[in-house]
Length: 479
Ligand code: CTP
Image (tube, rainbow, N blue to C red; front, side, top):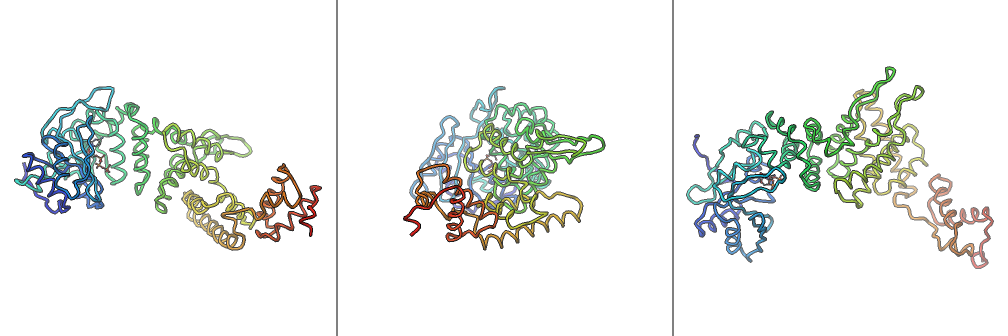
């Protein structure tokens, strides 16, 4: 075995001394393990949680640590898992007793026994997550790395400590984690692991949707999400998780006419948008913006390949997909739906940018107009440099026109200049259909540019429109 190296500089946070002393008080050894150690070597910084393994009771160690911290923070105990957690200032510290685990075929909850540090490292998902630094005074800062995780970090490799078939079959969430780490860190998953994921893919069905979605979000928030989605596709997991995306894969050819592969196109769009936004839901919108293309695909001799109405169909599919994955059915979902529904609008107007088309676009997109433009720009994936430039220029023109129109007409957060009450008063009306008709006519006149978005003009317009409908202004208003 090579000489053991010490990394005391990793342990500069004061919590480590406290844990070390507390463990000494209880005469047990303790280690910091997992993500914290991995991220130290990756220089990822920004530590939010720390995992401590005790060779003995993790719960007892947590209680002793709390006693030694100012204000003795509350220790949260998870009896079923034999773990404990406390918050020390800005970080969450998790404690677990070293354990040996064995799994049953139908569950990802293991049967647990007390074990040694080695046992505990064996049960971990990846060699890069099994690195441990000692907190015991006899070898403070020593790196315990039985599976050469440090070498894997250097060669950017995701590898399991044990036979990968066992690691993934024991806890199928790890298939998602492997792909997520590969995507976040731009690492390669070793061949044996990839094989094991392929052959265990159906076991993903025992994982809760919430955990799967957590991993999907992390893939989505990576610098280049396509790395993760390509791995999900290659391993067969995507069939289980997002069949709507799989349905976009492939190119059909009829009478020599082909359409583009909308799966790979979509992944390019997601990568493109990720260069311009960290908004998770806008990235989701990019992933889902074309899902309506599979069910709407048609070929006719006259028109070739078409996807009529795919934006509308796609926006309906968003709801079903969110529901299936137990994602929130709230304003985030509505935002994604809106982006999908409107995803072709700026493209349609880009070739002929009229004031009224731009006003309508801003009115319909409201506060999300910038997000929509970001999506449309990311949607340009042509490999033809001339066209690439032309499409981007078209959108520049749209954006410029948007600024001008918005400055003049303020339709982004449109509030009708004439209220329903005022219409009722003016024409002495009870609540009735006419009020809605008049309001709509005023809105249309503003969007079409017939009148400016101002009270006086709208009032005059309302009088004329009302008279055309056979309405008479009440005496009160005429004076
Ligand atoms: N772990 C595991 N199998 C899992 C989940 C976690 O073996 N399915 C182990 C790994 O050693 C991991 C540690 O538990 O490093 C902590 O897990 P977690 O906090 O979920 O992940 P991190 O590795 O810290 O990474 P991240 O914070 O990016 O999720």
